[in-house]
Amino acid sequence: MGNETKYIFVTGGVLSSLGKGLASASIGALLESRGLSVTIQKLDPYINVDPGTMNPFEHGEVFVTDDGTETDLDLGHYERFTHAKLGKDNNYTTGKIYYSVITKEREGKYLGGTVQVIPHITDEIKDSIRKVSTGVDVVIVEIGGTIGDIESLPFLEAIRQFHNDAGKNNVIHIHLTLVPYIKTAGEVKTKPTQHSVKELRSIGIQPDILLCRTDHLLSPEIKKKIAMFCNVDTDAVITAKDVDCIYECPLSFHEEGLDNKIEKLLNIWSRAPRLEAWKTLCHNLKTPDFEVTIAIVGKYVNLTESYKSLNEALTHGGIPNQCRVNLKFVDSETITSETCKVRLQGVDGILVPGGFGSRGIDGKIISAKYARENKIPYFGICLGMQIAVMEFARHVAGLEQANSTEFDPDTPHPVIDLLEKWIDDKSGTIQRRDLHSDKGGTMRLGAYPCVLEKESLVAKAYGTDTISERHRHRYEFNNAYLETLKAAGMTISGIAPSGDLVEIVELPDHPWFLGCQFHPEFKSRPMTPHPLFRSFIAATLEYSGYRKIVKGEDS
Image 1 (tube, rainbow, N blue to C red):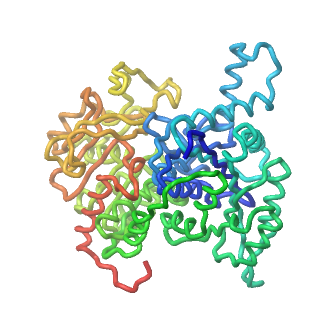
Image 2: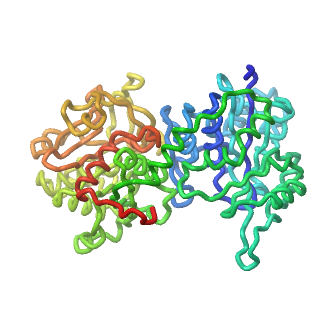
Image 3: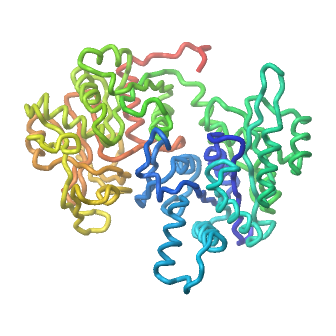
């Protein structure tokens, strides 16, 4: 295609959680399959500057990019489905936009003029879109929220203006709506879609393509009706049918002709799509030979969106092992010494994920102890690693009251503590932090290097001696207890190049017991499963005795 960047704006109507992020990621995957380069941006209407301080119960997972930006979980979808390199400019919130505008106003950059939503806020939004436009063929921009939300209006006005700025052949609007099936009537209803499009058109945006979320295929007659009332081409009404596996979405959209329609509207010339890898992936996911059950012991278990990347990474780990991974979410607050055996009965592996706060900590420690003593594969991620260190210190190293100062500031054995001074291996500078620092200021965020112990479990999993992984945490392994824990039998198998920061711990007399301070789930992809998840699932499969799936069983 030519040198002009093309833009696709994705909006949603009727109700939230329809899958705009998944749709945007799938569009990106389809365009990449045609040889085009893409990037994807999320514009979120909430006033928080970023989701870093938001409760996972309310907002779901906080995703972290290599550059240390805390972002919306949809950026995880974008990275898993495409090769786009995402960072701080790929997620903007209302708070981030206003913060930038107010800072400029305070610095006198508006020359004393009255600062208003139009043009200053909308110009800032348009500038944020242009920031990610360099060097790519197509920019996909997802607008968070639902049409009709008052907080979304500045973003919608900005993309309306952007359409005029960039030119008709360079911008299209894709609107995701709901076409519900009414069981008692035995038919799908198009009125919610009609009303949503009417709302969108009332603010000056005419959608070019409609993605109709439904659990029934839309008939040609229904598509024709929607097209007529919504003023779009009939072939621009796309069935976004529910799928068994999210990685089927690009294939489903392709079958509906979505990528062909996008190329036609944007006047793009590209090669035919190459979707063999996606077809193979979906086939492998649907036809596993074995299955395992993993207990995820955490405190956000009632909302699986809180562990979105983790859930996907576990699924990815099953693919090279021809294994279906069943997840059993266990509320750590329900685990006691008496209930542990019952709550964890029948699981082939135990995973304690990241988290903040003291609630449910005792149940996590009991779970780690149960896994260690019963030789059940254990994977501790971030807080889960710290839990493993605390448990080992208490019950093996003889430090009975060992704890993290996050949970007990007066513990006599702070095996996990705030490191007030450490060398940053990214910048080479000395970092300082304490309890009085801003919450975000005390976080170690983004990609950091790590050197692996030769012949360790983790080195064998990665097949290399040096790695880079993404972090999101405040507290660290306390080096004052390094020799004590090593003497008691714990292996320190991953450490920062500076030697200041312990990144990975293992137990060598256990089939598979590993804790890592970073979040490996953020870098796992369906086509390239993360080495630690691949290795963990292999260990759980061995523990299960290679439990086969009965063919014909619903998978």
